[in-house]
Length: 225
Image (cartoon, rainbow, N blue to C red; front, top):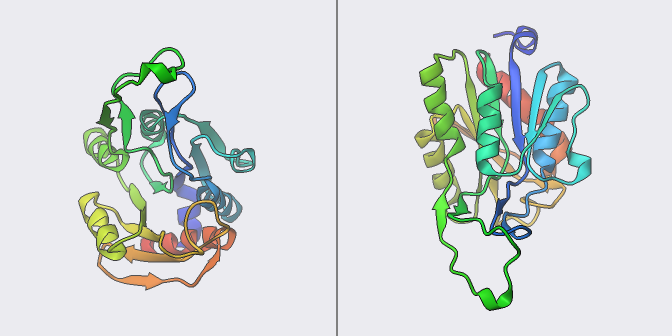
């Protein structure tokens, strides 16, 4: 599909940042994601001409709102899943940049726990957003939905990322190798490898996340043409 037609007809849904799973009224499980990468993808999409829905977890204020886009703030992984499903429609491009928590406490304590409480905290698995989206697409009969994943890995990074692409039936996955000093959470740069479902891949040099936002959108457009 021609890029101009794609930009006029497709809707981009970008998830960004961490999620939080509360243990009690103030403590939670989370991770160091700032949402910087997702924010810059969303900005690039807006600037290129896409309609954008930007779904973010608890991120710093500078990565919270996209001008001229639809901004949706969420807290938990289930919140993020529900927001994604509510935004999905025909001709959607879902870019799952967020780092949602895989587990949540089975029980959330109503009040702040004291040291003397010494609780046992049982964790249960959160729903997998991309697998849940696949089920929703089939049940709702949605057409032309493109799924883009991100994988943050440290060991056997390529193999894990490719297996995630296959398991979740993704079109593309962007591998973020956390063993690299200039790549990962809380830094201004990433060293990404894009892996396609035809098992071709391209390793990109280290670049700022702002510039990578445009490269990622352009890579998706090339894939869809």
